[in-house]
Length: 128
Image (cartoon, rainbow, N blue to C red; front, side, top):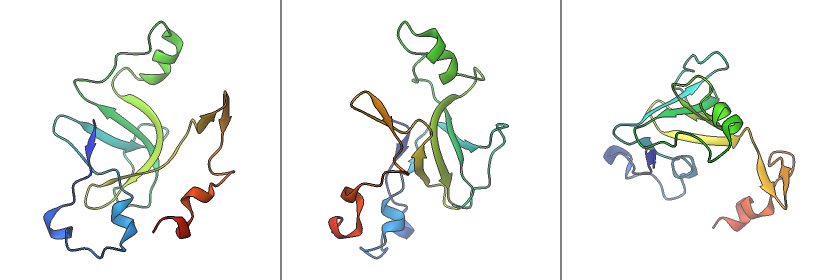
């Protein structure tokens, strides 16, 4: 667990139809250092617009993949933070929103680019 989808008390009266708040992953929990960074590991502005890779540090994170040192090296590229490969933004309130994964989605043994193949399951008409 890295974030908690609990709404700040001053935001609890938000409109039920306010999807922008409901789609966020939440706020980092204590002992989690969660950042959104550019390709040079510099923090991007927390304005809800500038996207970057979500990287994280916490005492309970995995040290790597079982019997897969190459994947483990990619996971901990800089040996300081775990690279999630998720692309996200942090808004001015500190809420994380994950926009997509850099790795895409795997289905039937192959990679599926979710941006190139939108699913009708996420259409506005089915989310009521």
